[in-house]
Amino acid sequence: MVEGKKLATEAAAIELAGRLTGLDKLTSEIVARRLVLSTSSLPFLWREVVAKPAWEVTFFHAALKLKSAVPNFQDRYPREFTVVMLEDSGQLVSVTSLYKGEAPEMRAPASADSAQKQLQNDEEVYTGLPKDDPKIRFLDALDAILSKGSGSPFMAKAIEGVYVMESRMGSSPRAVWVITLRGLPPFSAHGPHADSVPIWQRNHMRNVVDAQTGDWLFATNSPQPQ
Image 1: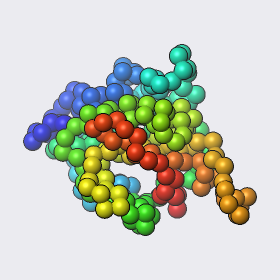
Image 2 (image 1 turned 90 degrees about the horizontal axis):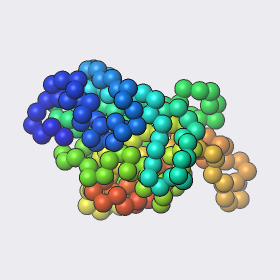
Image 3 (image 1 turned 90 degrees about the vertical axis):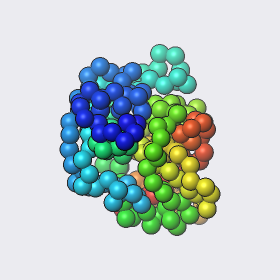
């Protein structure tokens, strides 16, 4: 993070986005542009980022390569990752790779308000954007999910990540990567009404990884799409 300084140039934005995520190791085709954030789906914290000047850095043709993968394993989906950071502080707002094909089984993510209510019901809150850089990059957090978490990043059609201070069930806030894998092969449903659970409720998983240690913490399929 550029502490107390603006991200004044395209080069500075690209350097920081690469340093926070590791995505610069996957491609050399990178473009940055300034924008003002008009909307955000970030629960609890959307007011901190909406209407703020930001940089959007896009990493094109960035097929995933993770250390825990089988040697020479090929990513099954074409990836284009977009990293958004606040211009004034360099704080990371989001890392997103959308799916551009046809996926009728995928639903749009919950709005910030809906996601916040669902997380609160599970006694989980995001208390702020961290002021310090993560010790674990975004790609390393994906690797922790691949080796220890729930759902394979390689099998996800879309990937969404945020770097936030998170508190669960009254615990002290900690800096974490919260990464949602969307468009996964549907998980099996259990219980007396398992046959009636639609695919769109079973094809996404949100994993939480400690951004300082790299420890995988937990996974849940909440919040559900609207």
